[in-house]
Length: 240
Ligand code: SF4
Image (cartoon, rainbow, N blue to C red; front, top):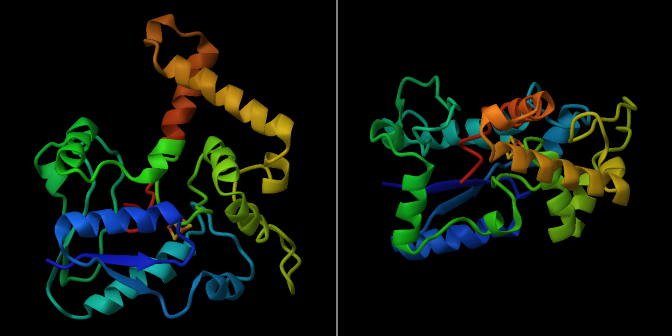
């Protein structure tokens, strides 16, 4: 068994901390690799296009390709930590020598089971859960929800600033892209906007705890929107 982590160099400090915790538990080193050409190189190649769900060049260039190159033609079984209650499909290699397997799904393990396993092992949940972030991956990952951007700004303001730096007209094309849908990070960080995002999130969280029968139509719509936001093919190869 070989444990491999592809580092984009744009990771959260929490991710490195968690990797160390996992290594302590395993008594084995998690091999860390960096793609030869990093995010900023490909950002330039793609004309300053910030990646998104529909333009996900980052996963391909920083994770998938380097992984497949590392594997080469060896016969590999790739263990994917997708739970039985997740709707994502995960990364499925098209290389015939790589076979993905989903042990948690095969055993029908859901979130509560995984929490129990992590607690019992002493590894626990990744540190970013304590400040309300649901996934690892790059600190600027476009998959994060608005509330997670707010929390990133509060927790790691310098990383928020670094993400903001990408939202400027790209030299040559003049195009500007944003990480988050429909607004720039400069707009999102305005105190009144951050307050509104927090209030909206609190309302939706409260609604999500009610049964459908007790919801207003607006709340039902909000719940659906939350489910849609959570439903993504977020990089299983990116997140821990
Ligand atoms: S974590 Fe997000 S931004 Fe980073 S490579 Fe994966 S999809 Fe792209």
